[in-house]
Image (cartoon, rainbow, N blue to C red; front, side, top):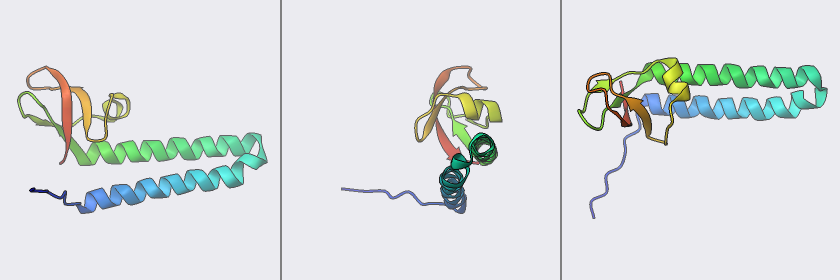
Length: 109
């Protein structure tokens, strides 16, 4: 059986670290801010929103997608990255070259 292991790049490791820090900030924010009431909830919402914007911005500038049909490599903007239906390794996107909607595979830029 020939097993191929995925090589993790520095970019993948940085993304995982950023995601872990985001989750830690949300948990700590929940523990310390939610008991404070109104402004605590607002503060936690701010942490969530800021973390989400930073994570999606990082992802949309550092990753690209490959069309399943024509193999065209293309990037997407912040809004498509945020709202497109997705799995762990693909997004349902319209290829700018062939115009077909497919589950495009994520790749490093």
